[in-house]
Image 1: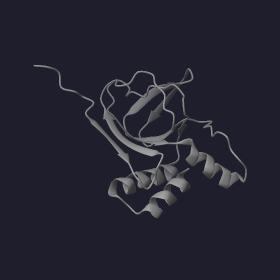
Image 2 (image 1 turned 60 degrees about the horizontal axis):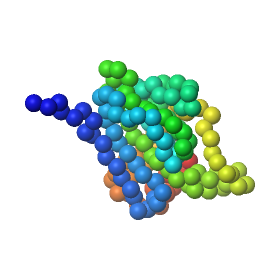
Image 3 (image 1 turned 180 degrees about the horizontal axis):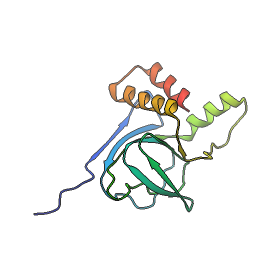
Image 4 (image 1 turned 30 degrees about the vertical axis):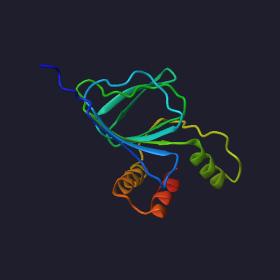
Length: 153
């Protein structure tokens, strides 16, 4: 009898109210990804487990209740640490969202947004993104989803 797949709990959402945003929920028990990139910004958080990942050759560790920020086209492979069931929620956000919010906040054109710290402890920000994730899953109203996304960014 063959081995059962262990990485079967993966779900994606694309909400028509938030074009350019994809939402993901994943639960992994062992390595699932080779090094890869995304064209979008990756903003997410771990619900459980821990991962050690590399960004531009620098290793980082993220654990449950921490936020993770990865810029577009940055090579990474976020797999669970050994003996760690990792569950996470991720938002893949096109750069136009971040640029428009940054321009509104800073009052000038912002070509790109960078994250000086890819792993962040911020319970208030985490709660905000967790709420946005749930509102998208529950099919909340457009204004609520847009407001939560802009505030989070």
